[in-house]
Amino acid sequence: MPNMSTSERVEQSLAWELHVELASRITSVTLGPEEGLLSEALDSLYCVFETARHALAAHPPQRALVEDSLHQVVFRLLNQGLRPFLSRWHPRLDAYHARRPQHVSRLDHELAWAQAGQLRAELAELQVLLRDVTERLAELAGAGSLLPAVR
Amino acid sequence: MARRVPREIGIKLKLPFVGEVSGNWAPEQAERKAAWELYVELSTRISVVPLGRDEGLARGALTSLYTLFGSTREILRKHGPATSPRKGPDEFTLGKLALTVLTVVRPVTAYWHPQLEAWEVKRATDAGPIDHENAWERIDELRAAIETVRQGLQEVAEALAEVAGAAPLTPDSRLLGNLRKQRGGGERLKALCHSAQRPSLAA
Image 1: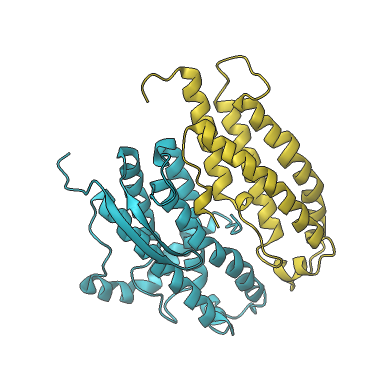
Image 2: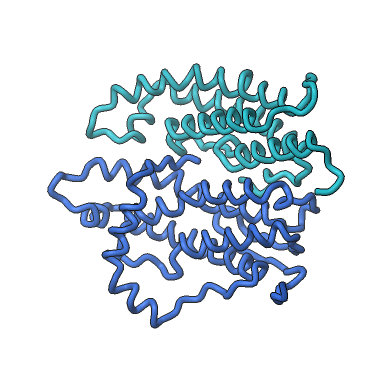
């Protein structure tokens, strides 16, 4: 892209990387009541967290950060969005899975979990927030949003 | 670069879980490059012929479909925001097509992976994986789901091929004769190549 400052290029590429990550994962997809494995949904969210952390480290800001700088948006995505959810649910679900008898599948074990409904409800709330961030990231990347193609 | 590729193509797809989508696609250079890579993924990850009964594991096919999430993400990342230029809602971009691929694949991997796994844990130690899979009461349903996705992805692959200037995906009967004979060996290799990564199919 011609006439772009280094700072703009860094931000565009960071925003795009995270837009792709969020748009292509469970973060953007409504999960039906008995669809998907919760443990894998949480693992997928964790992957977003890891990718975002690495992307932040690889794209240092080229100008002083202000409240609505891209990097701040990403920090908020991690610290106010993903982390509280993951630190609340990952250990609980792991502990529950640790009690799974060998002949019971992960699916059946999860279906029998008393807290599954609560997790799904909170995940749906988190997804609303994540969708907003995903759209914002597409704007900052100067790209068309990928979300319309996701169902 | 004297390849004769169209400047704009009309796309009309009928896809599982998505329905009918149509529009024009006037790809820019980054989109064409990414289209080629996605085309390679699709045409090597999905079979050009239906997976016959007793011809290999549905598990292998599911895992192979699942790898499309990672590779699609990687292709989009690599070629940057130029793969998703801002266009009208009726216009296609490589980015939209790529996410459409994932939308077609996701319901099948997300639903069937845990269902099949629930059957797999019941396998007796002396039963072979193929026999056990074929003994599942839902195996035909799963194969049908995989077949639906395969047909959808083939339509997408054809559009990508046109833009990337590649030959269409048609089965070569001479080659297929050999492939069918060798399938057992192929499946063993596939299992080897996937054993290192533990698939997580929620994506």
